[in-house]
Image 1 (spheres, rainbow, N blue to C red):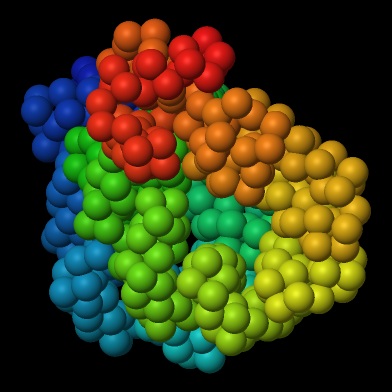
Image 2: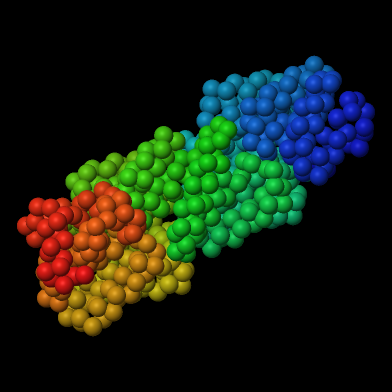
Length: 554
């Protein structure tokens, strides 16, 4: 794509045209778009300016207008007999169509570009035509063909001194190597591509594409520190161009993930919601599925089951590969059989190592809840292999925690403690309070099995405090089920959360108000009430209120 620095200082043509070109130089994309549209209305733009109009339209989120301008530039170059430039426009149209998921259009533009270059000699445009070839091969998991294509693209880019092409080839090679399990080599190439971006050596559209691709790769391999670094860089880059649209939603998704990891859950949910809105308008972008999935995950962790269900449904409309969130939501509701069926489908389909690791961790958790230790052991074993191959601290800690939980379920508490303490140390180092608290719950059970009641109580209390601070309603309910309060509480068989519900019922408020106070869904409140009535053999809220007074709960 054209770069702002290549805009001439000519003020020839329609009066709006000089202002449009100046806006391009200043990276004022909205103004550039408006001025180019006005100039085009006054007098049809030449192909060079149509390319700049396409850039301005793309960077302000006007994808249809961007494609239309680039197609007109293609026709304009053909009319002037500039075959190579016409072919380059066609090549970019193929790339854009492929990213949009329009494979037929992508194929059509690529075929046209190839035909145009059949009689041309060695030229940089042929490298641009190899980009969609490599991208298509990568999407089809033909990593050998994808790598070969990107290597050839890199060679052409270097030969002709085209920094855009060379940098795109580096990120393409890096992504392929990461997916082949060659993590260190892949990450090195991605970092090299980012150096070109940070140095301002590439055009804005290429820079934004590389930013997003590299951050995605970091997510795939759970390289959280690198993801945080590049996400911060992307945010600053976007902030320097306030009217730029396409990359802000993507940035918000990664920010939400990092905030979730750090325990800033209200902020993470807000960022996820913003990402959903930004990526849904004016036309839904491919990443909108990931935004809705992140939003659903936050609702699930907060115990907001109905909101989570709705967001998972929205995510499923856009994500091609299923993820384990819905299965974990079923588990939180006590629907163990449904959770097993859901997670089996996910594990059967997911191939990419990072997402498969996520699915295997969920499968092990669900299998243990179903007392299917053979499946849990198998999932934990494969998870450990993937984590070792990728080598990311976070993933290694997830594998260690899962392995420890399986050992505990099998009755090997001493070995489980060693694995769990290793996971706890890593999560604390990564400042991941939720994951650390979940490990502490397992540690508490392991210490209890070893007869170390003091350590068990300490770990469980620490986990409860962390979950309270986070607002992790589902995990809090799980902790309360682990604690036998019947010997020390006048409430008899009720868990702590059920005691909280009884107290609020006795105060005379509605289920909706109880849900708001406890930060859980109304459906969860209803389930707690049903459990209370069954445990205490009661039939009404009035009877529950009387019980609360009789047992000194108020």
